[in-house]
Image (cartoon, rainbow, N blue to C red; front, side, top):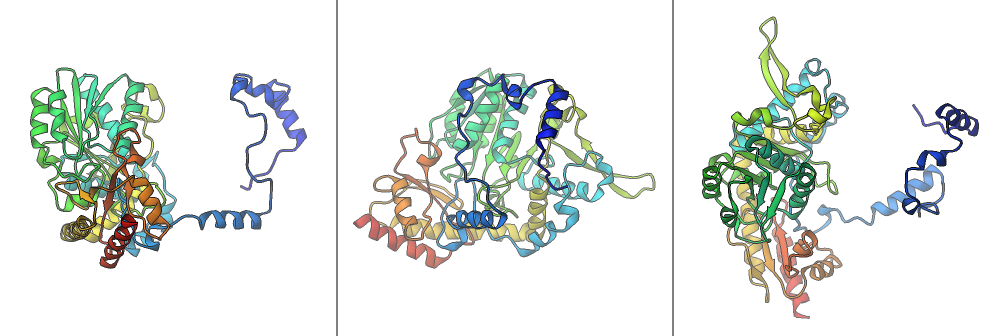
Length: 448
């Protein structure tokens, strides 16, 4: 239905039914200090053609990742997405479907989510996975809340390698839920430092590998220390392709595995939407947030799918809910699942190996640039570099030459005192000529 503006007579009639004299009376509870005294600074009403021109001009100011050398990562990675993925997800039955409130009718949707869960469980090395969450950061926050319910303790310890945006998301939800958080100072290679902070009040320990600086860590010893104290280990991963090369969270003793699934099947898209991967040990399944699809047989003995776990309280009695997540990021989960099906285990392992190969080439090239110091000792496809001067200024200078050289750590955490640290990433989309151009440009810029 097209939007039809109300006439003045319509407004008067509606206000009369409500029992107020004017629209302003509906906002009496808003303090005067919070009200605007003039219109929002936006252009006045114009025609559709003019709006399209204005929006097109604004869009042209963006610099797409594929328009030149690109080395940004820090939680969102540029990977090749096969055309098959977009072709399938744009079919009407997938593109328009949303959360199934009468789920068993939507057998296709449930099967997709079931396959997605199976893939996530296999990737993370965990026993059970849910039908996805919004993204990795909110998944991490939900994992902390889940650990609090399981252990009945109220403290979460976070390593200095956890992505600052994930930390902020956890702190926001934890504060509202009355859960105390203890975060270590940002550190390139100190995941094990969380062990000393574990005590009898600790509900969970949150670590990330590869961490925000790209450092890869075997967290088995952290898992052992957490379990000895009765706490849970939550392992966060922001680069899902790394599962093709590194030990899975389950192999390292994780109780809950959380990841951002954007790297597989989902483009950068200027920041989303993305899809959160969430898996855990089977004994904790009743405390797991979100939805869980299961396989069964119908009355005729035919294979079918059901929404095994999803309490109605999620939708109605919200104060009784385990979680108030009311989406399964279905379209992004489908894209993830299609890409994973195309890759298979062999394809994912080859893709991961190629990513590591590209990152090693980038590391070797940057190590030869005067004044540059490689900080990350063990990495997958991303690492930290100390640069001469401020990393943010260097990135801006290179951007003016058409190169997106990485993400300054100061952009993620301005208070960390790491203004000279640059995070750089390389994937299968990185060309050797891009690496050569970057290093030549850096040598020139730094030498000026």
